[in-house]
Amino acid sequence: MTAAQERPGERPPPARPHVLPHGRYDELFETTAALLALVRRAVLALGPTWPERLVALGADPADHPPYSGLESTETDCCTMLASGEFVVGETGPRLVALGAGASLDSAEDVTALSSASQGQAGGTLFAHDPRAARAAALADLCAHRGLPRSVALVGPGFAPDDAHDLRQRGFTTALLGPDRLPGALGRPGRPRYALGLLSGARPAADQDRARLRDAQRAGLLLLPPLSSTLLADRRALALVSEGLPWMTHGERSLVERRLPWTRLALAGRTWWHGTEQELPELLLAQRERFVVKHAVAGAGPLVAGHETDERTWTAAVRRAFRNADSVVQEYVRPAPAPLTLSARLFADRPGGCRVRYPLAGVSRRAAPSAAPRCR
Image (cartoon, rainbow, N blue to C red; front, side):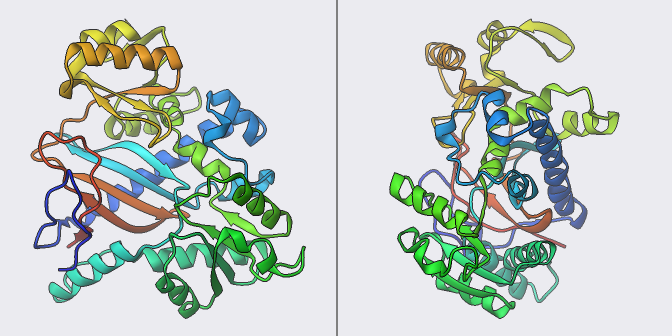
């Protein structure tokens, strides 16, 4: 079968597709959608506007560049793309992180893997098509807002196949670099493209960011918006893990089953397995039970207590509490072998799933190597 490129820290892709029972496959997407909805509600409750919510969450504005000041657009589109990152533990899959707003760019790897394995199995396997899910989500957004089906693919993460696929599904589209904005949109107020999809390679230069803001002011609806990355901030997941007054019994039960215990790295007392504990002391006393993660994915290393010595762990805990930029999470021990699943959603539509196979003794951050199907 076709497979994604092998990278350091991961096992070679398997020769056969990774197959899940249909019910377990569906559960990955249902759990991701349910926990994403809880996180969205928790973040919206933090304040009346997205900048105020960012401050209330304790997030650094530098990590969430404000491309848009359109509150309704941010709120409507904040879950346009999301993924649930699962580790399969002894009690089943546990969602260890939410990805939101990372990119609406190429889904080529998942599509190729799914198509190859389904053909190999003679059509007996099923997997969601991420490109079809992406196109359907964009079509619904255009219909809801009365926009033409026209899309600018902005940034280097897109491939010609992405543009071709969208054209085949009834969209007018073009590949554009940020340096061509806003000029390539045509007249201000009546842009040539209604939607702009921003690739995962977010522009860091101030000039490119200014061009994106100018493109929005000219009428381009740029996706994903600022609000998406705020939902992906791990501090938001910690709010849901701790429990909020408006959560129902069913929602609390879901969190207990599928979300590992997660807390903000802030000094104070907390409940852990029915006991009240001082959080810093708990982490130092139970090193092998926890991991420390930066609140923003990619901003720093994940430190796992079971993989470090006491001195390294103590330094990581002290740094996290000193800087107040991290969360702590109970370690999910993989069983029977390391396996991480990433279930992708496009506006709550299942859009395929990736599997990672990290090597033993290597931190669980390997590149995707297969796409699972169900029977």
